[in-house]
Image (cartoon, rainbow, N blue to C red; front, side, top):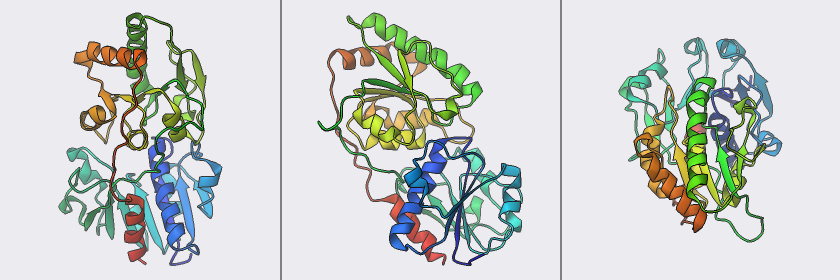
Length: 324
């Protein structure tokens, strides 16, 4: 294999955010060096990413996570792992980089490998979260937020109404907790608001076809959920890394709903971003969320997009290119 080839490893079953993040970095790499060989190794069909975006990769390979190290056996270039643990990667040749998204403190050490990483990239500003280099035996560098910017809504596209997005890396177990709560929020808001309103659910492939009882319509957003966010009058969404950041670049008000996760703390993310994007849901303050939704529906208000700072994808690409 070409020693200058770059292989991104991301899990597609555990959430779209992994695939979106590495695709955004790959696009930044391609802008800097068009002749690079870029490959994607994932454990599921990369649905939810537009075909045009996926074409940034020269090859896409799918393997179960337990077989990924074997698929990388001939790698002598750079392999970049996005917040994923792959058995046997310590035996691989070449240089290895880790992209480590916000992770609960007691789980950071799970990403350490014998011999250490050649580089650890943290996709957020340094003052937001840092894991500490000792546990990972590597130089850890924060690059800023990695996001495809969307911008505020203008008059060129019709409003998308009230949209519920139930992604954020949810599993069947988390859906069983989340869906009754969302249905309760929607039902209580309908009773509070003095007029009828329609709610549409963005039902992507990871939802397993399960729709909420309280929505009027479902649709597949494909690879354009960020554009749906921009066009929406109001969004109710789980607090995944990607969803929160893509919403932040729009002017769309949002209710953020945390779900339990094994790695990142969505409750903490809701506390950080809820008031900046609209409102953060707290189970103990359910009525406050209903009040906020009702007020937003009765008197719609946009908000200012959040300034996310410098381009984290470009900085991540530079750090990866340094390894060459």
